[in-house]
Each structure stands twice: as C-alpha cells, then as structure tokens.
Length: 271
Length: 279
Image 1 (cartoon, rainbow over the protein chains, first blue to last red):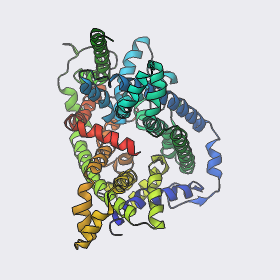
Image 2 (tube, chains in turn blue, green; image 1 turned 90 degrees about the vertical axis):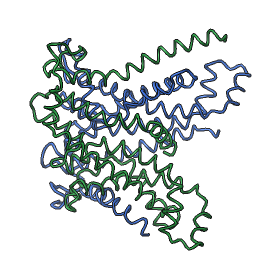
Image 3 (cartoon, each protein chain N blue to C red; image 1 turned 135 degrees about the horizontal axis):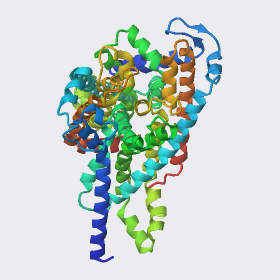
Image 4 (cartoon, rainbow over the protein chains, first blue to last red; image 1 turned 90 degrees about the horizontal axis):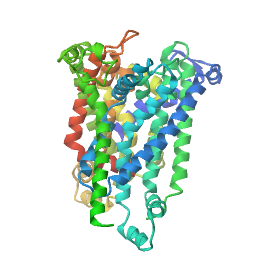
C-alpha cells in the first residue's frame, strides 16, 4: 500500500477532489469554492441564454471533422511514401515529426505571423473574418500533427507481414485492391489510435486557439475549451455557468471518445 | 517494373519529399529570419529577408528577454519539467505495480478511475484544481510538481500496468523467497525491467509538461512564468504586440526543444509509437 500512496494522494489532489467538487459546484452559485449556494440546474439553463456555447460547439465540431480527415489522409500518404525504402527516409521522418514538439502557444504565434503575412497585402488580417481563423487553425493542426500520426502509420505499415503482400501480388492484386484489401485492414489498429488522438486533440484544443486568434473576431472562432475558460475568468458571477459548461464538455468528450473506440475497434482484424 | 523506372520513380519521390520537407521547415525558418528584423518590418512583410534597412541584429533578443525575463522562465520550465518527469516515472511505476499485483475491488476501481482521468478535459477541473492548489499552498514551482504527478498518473499507470502484466510473477516470488522485501524487489528487480516503458513515459510527459500553458498559468502564472506563459504574456493587455521581441522569444523557446529532439530523436519516435500502441 505504501507504494500506491504517493501516486494516489497526488491523483486525489490534482484530479479526483477537483473533479468531484466541479460536478457538485455546477449546481451552485459561487465565486470561490467555499461560498456556494445551491441553485439546482439554474447554471445549466443559463448556458443556453445566449448562443456563444452552441456556436463554439458548432465551430469545434466543424474544425474537428475537417482536421481529423485532413491530418489522417496527409499522415497516411506520407507514411506510404516513406515506406518504399528510398534514401533519406530517416531525415524526412525527422523533419516531418519536428513541429509536433513545439508547444501550442508558440505554434499559434508562428502561424499568426505567417497567415497575416499572406493576408495583409490584401488588406485583411486573420481576425477580419472567422473563415481565416478556421482555416488557419486547420493548417496549424495539420502542420503540428501530421508528423506524429505519420510515425504511427509507418509502424503499422511496417508490421504488415511480407507473406501477405507477396500472396496478394501472386494473386494479381492491383494497387487499389492491395490498398483496400490488404493494407487498410492490416493497419486498422493504427487508424483507430490516430483517429482517436486527432479527434480528442481537436475537441480539447485550447492553446493554439488562444494564441492564433483568441476567439476573434467577436468570439466567432472560439472553440469549446476557450469558451469555457472565458466564461470562468472573463466576467465575475459566471463561475457556476462555466463549471456547468465544463461538465457538459466532459460528458461530450467522454461520449465521443468511447463511441469512436468502439466503432473502429470493431473493424480491426486479427493479424 | 524495370530497374530504370524504379530508379526514376525514386528520384521523383525524393524531390517531392524534399519540397515537402522544406515546406514543413519553412515556418520555423521564417520566424528565425524575422527575429533579426526590426519590429516594424515584420507584420507587413514576413517573407522578406532582412535587408540593410530592416536588419536589427540581436536587439529583439535583448529587448524580448528583458521584457519577459526569458532566462527565469527557462529556469522554471526546466526545473518543473525535469522534476515532474522524474516524479511521474517513479510514482506511477510504483502505483502501477501495486494496482496490478494486488487485486482487490479497490485497486480495480482505482485503475479504471485513473484511465478515465486521461480523457477528461482540463477545463473540467481547472477552476477547482487551482483553488485547491491555492489552499494547500501548492502554488509554487515545487508544489506544482504534485499537480503534474497527479495529472500524469493516468497515462503513467496505464502504460506501466500494461507492461507489468507481461512480467512473469515467478521473478518477483523468487526475490521474495530470497528474503527481499517489497522495496528491494521493486527497485532491484521490477524497476530495471520497466526501463523501456519508463523512457516512453518520460518522453511523453516531457513533451506535455514543457509545452503546457494553462496549468502553470492558473496556479503559478503571476509569480513564476514558465516559457509558454511568458510568451503569451508578451501579448500584454490591449496594445500592439512587439513582434520583434515575439519572434526572438519564439526562436529561444524552440531552440531547447529542437536540441532535445535532435539528440534523443530515436527514443522520442520510438516512445511515441510505443505510447500509441498501448493507447
């Protein structure tokens, strides 16, 4: 038991106690954690008085769908190109993976400068129109995540047995059948994990959103995590609403994560 | 396919990949280039090379690092990252060992709770956690280690536990029969076997803690700014951002992580793959 104690204590302080308190407080009106008065589901009702939460939800869903598709297609394509045994494969892999190590805040500022550099000659900036912020975030996330997912796809492709590929070649499989009937089914575990990671990363995105546009113009590029943060710390008196939003956000993320795992896991085949 | 066509295809592929690689590197190069331009010439023409008119030498580096006390931030980031990662690796491997080897309702429950914590978004607990940290006086660079160990324990326990299950129990039993207590058994027998997983856990957590923004911002951000907090602080209130200082600080923020990456990339890429497969 002595072995478990330090871990369990840290876990309780950092996660478990705040989590339970958070759920309880979402039914209270409060400004610090000790001055709450019980108000039932009032906080949850107040979330929907104005539409900033639903518009953040919609923006997040659109962003996540687009970036999950583009990142995984890009990463898979690069992985296919880098498993053909050409010279310099390692150097390419090193370069493609590199952006992943850079933190979200730094990434946001890098791309803000570049995108504004492209837009300024046309007399606009990234916060002139929400569509610039949207596509800016998509480009940023692709740049950051393609290398990471590529590494996972490469591992998956390298694990396909040569016998399987040879057998398909002898049977006269063309490139399309090879991809659809041999490669894709064999790397289903990689697809599961990559779509899981991109999906949850997309939904929980915060740092990049804050540094790139900070939700501008007028909250129109605000994602869920940033919306919750601004509700908590933007104006006093809305802490309860922020906490209620956070509870809904958690349920949503957990639901999506579990559904996604169940869906793609069911498609995995035993090698 | 003839040898000649294969060769030609490889050449085309290499050129395409080289162009892509350049495209991947260009954002970093652009920031680097602009960090030597005076601040008025950055936003308007970020793609122009520094010229005699726009070149400003190391001025941005000096003004930027004074503005946000970059070297203090670097110190805090380094301290917090190193000790959190050591702490997480040690504490969660011990926790995982206990939870895997002692099977009770409580340990099973605790294990699932830890795994669940991995998907809970930080916004769920950020407010209550920062208040709790404040009440327990954990709002300093040492106290924050407790929070990082707590938040990191989900992933750590999950990964160690997966590996411990594959270690034959007979090894530990043999050590016990030879008279080794649990402490000796763990540190002399179990932990050395866990080393590959420990490296993976350490790498994934280094990438997380070093780049983390919200947790240090909310708990220690006013007094002790880590690098991401200091960078975002340059944005300031409502005034225009000093883009010169920003570019220079972005470069300084990237240098340590790129050096770390290039010196340990074999382990980093392997660690990412191992972490993903377990996930």
